[in-house]
Length: 140
Image (cartoon, rainbow, N blue to C red; front, top):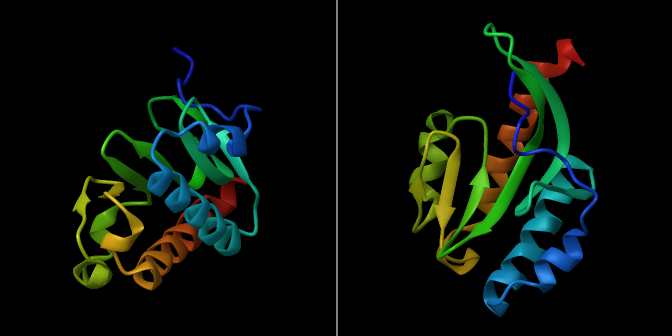
């Protein structure tokens, strides 16, 4: 079975954020590090080349594929910041109050933190963190 592409690395989160070419995105990343650290109680770790994750869980699918993933994470992508959560469909009321964003199945996308309500984002991240932790707690 192929090895997972996104794995925890020893790369420096601070160096990664400093290397970003957009000062506003770098500032937003520092704010997200603080929010996610406060929620998770964990320090940030780099996952792959560009994902900043907090805490980790082990998953195993019925297919036999298994691996580790961050419980909550984000990544500054070209033109937007991606926050990874455990299924956006679980948060319709909060997402309606979030502000200017778009969605994927497990991603919330926005251009800058100033486009969204950070208190609402923190609630979404907190619920996602607790949900993922409780879902995988029996496997830990």
